[in-house]
Length: 414
Image 1 (cartoon, helix red, strand yellow):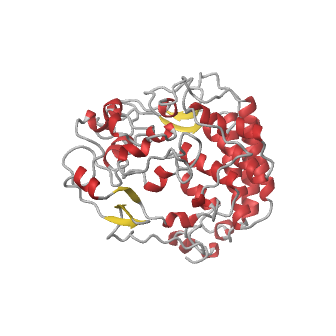
Image 2 (cartoon, rainbow, N blue to C red; image 1 turned 45 degrees about the vertical axis):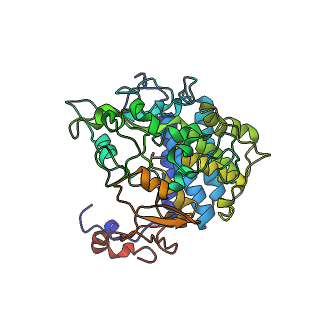
Image 3 (spheres, rainbow, N blue to C red; image 1 turned 120 degrees about the vertical axis):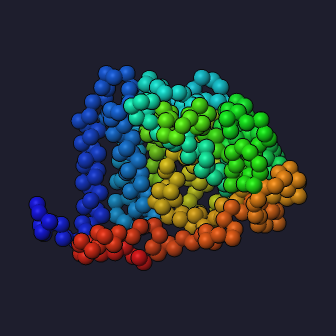
């Protein structure tokens, strides 16, 4: 081909044609890649189990996109997603990593230093080594971590398996410590509890009281007051810029469990046994009550989502388990839930008691149901987020591409 070849000036190929080829490529990979490279689970080699996980992810995206946005063949894609995930679950060599400590095990694989070879949940990862190739992820984690939002923190269930809107165990958020009481242990392994600063070595083993907010002297601040602790590595966070050897987990077995549960739920074929080998295994690791098909809580916050309470809970489990693993934005897109991106980024409660507790904090607040909370973007260009469902589910075709090939056409609304 040359720069004048007709193929370079063609119109876009229909989505159905593109995705049928994607499916064929993924299926080929699952059939041709070896199950084991005999490298002991070392980094950098994709095996057929990894291909099955990627296939389940792509097919789940396509199936739910077609179901909620319109399109043919949604069930076929969901069946492919379920079959790929189920083969990995049934026949693959992977399991959830756990030592029997529900207060630490969820976070444990993200805190194992340097070498993840042989860790049973890690399917594909990247090694970094000082003097060879390093990263600066922990530098960003330390200096640019805005914090978890009120919406995220409120989605963790209470220890009775009920959402905070229904559980009598919820202690409220009058002070930050109350937020963690009687909650899914994954919350305290994702968001920093003030008592855990020394355990995690947060803020270079800072002795100041946490959380710390913008304007407060010293330490590491969080825009929301909910410091993110998941994946935090104290040793490399304070090393010289771009010298971190913290390994990067790219694919892990926990996602396969979530992909399978969601796919069969969307197909309407899910059983209690399906929940027990997926969602409930994730809950067992953190000693949370099982999800029971015959007794699914109905969270009033999600009754307008247009899906069953069971699918609501499976989506909630996915948000909690895979937080900060790069999938949430695409999940909202494929579910046609983009309007959730219009929820303002609120932080901790900001009443008189909080103002007295955090002197010199320079934050703004807004009322939510009559209670003041930190309003991160108040007074900025992002104070009123907008998600236009007629255009924002797709990104624009870059002008540089259109200049080279006008036949591509632009996406709706752009």
